[in-house]
Length: 113
Length: 116
Image (tube, rainbow over the protein chains, first blue to last red):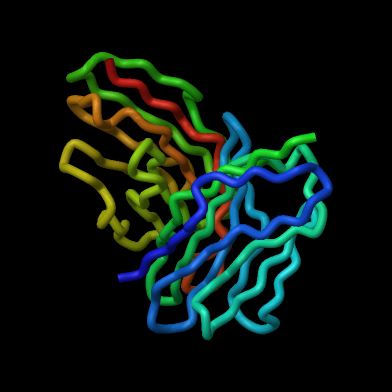
């Protein structure tokens, strides 16, 4: 069965520091991969997605993620974090033969000034 | 353009009562999904509608849960005889096409359900 692991429940960084949020998936074939962000009281906003092609994906708000098949990972990165990036981040996986997304448990990002 | 909308934004109900949650997808989106976000369970898939096909109900937790989609647009999720463990945020998403065709799901703001 497919699964998604986000090992870090809570991360704290200083504003301006770089950020990497980890995501590992379990699936036998090439998955479809997504990162969503959820601000307090808000729905999920899509940051970026990977279906195929270039394994380095650019998203909104200066985020990027890299699909590494050998490591079954799809880590989210940002070179310089802004205070407004404080939110909860969810990695999700889907496949070509199912239509539902499987979500990780989320990583809560806190940004200190 | 307009995104996915859900109503009500908050719903408080008493144990044993029935509730209906509504989702208006993005215009033209043929695929519609319901997910549930609860403490300790994370985000879990409930049900999926695609066009005129039979819905995928594989994620519904019990027969107290049902959903319909009228006219290929608006969807209603109904929970009968609510229990305290039903308390959660119910999220609706829509996409132009199914995931198998690399469709991207766009989420609404959710309905927070509290069962007393």
